[in-house]
Length: 152
Image (tube, rainbow, N blue to C red; front, top):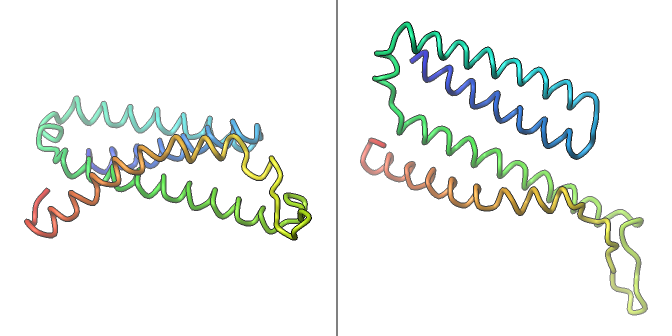
């Protein structure tokens, strides 16, 4: 149980770490860099803790339910990818309502300007799509399997 909790804690910390990396690449802010460094340290300490527990009690690693952990991992990645997409789509939708991102043509139709969707937003949506589809389908299939059969 302790190994599973440490793995899940590492998973959450690693996801936050990746989010800080993306935020730092997009904004180059001091806050995102500080978060990146802090999560790197916590990831190191969690992995050291996992190594110590694995060396002292190898039977815990042997009894680990890997299919359950993979199911939890896939659900977490699914939720993170979905939240990233939702946040980006909300930002783009709000930009479409601001007059500095469009003008009206001769017929009264909106013509959006080039900066409506940034390259980073476009790449994030494009890169997370395969993860969202593949890992999300695995999560849903395992969930259906668990509901029907009661096991993973």
